[in-house]
Length: 167
Image 1: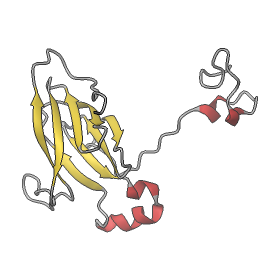
Image 2 (image 1 turned 90 degrees about the vertical axis):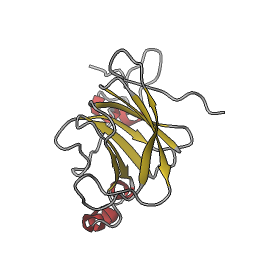
Image 3 (image 1 turned 180 degrees about the vertical axis):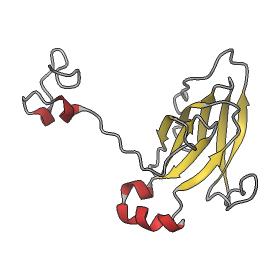
Image 4 (image 1 turned 180 degrees about the horizontal axis):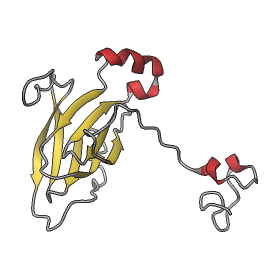
């Protein structure tokens, strides 16, 4: 059986299959490092920043988390990041009151938007300096991101969002 990626109507077979019936060669492969998570709850959304330096996740723990991409790209950096340098988790944002269903970077990467089961969209911006420590102490976040806009008025959970075209 041909998979949809391997046999689109009216198009040649994809190069990895080389004419053979190997659907697995055309499937997207996803790698999730063990250290990327949302406190045992599902990760509902992942977005890569336009500069490729970080990625954001939204999850069932009602948080938006920003992660460094360096440890994902290079196993040596991942091994050295066990001691916190460079940090894996850059920032954890806990402004939502429901599961975070979607995270999206602006075209410039200067802003990050999230939508959640609390019927709100939040827009975050990075500020200078390191972030503050979380509730109850702990080490400060490596990056300082803060909610700069709250978009209320949705009548249902926010499950997707998109930025308009850049100016």
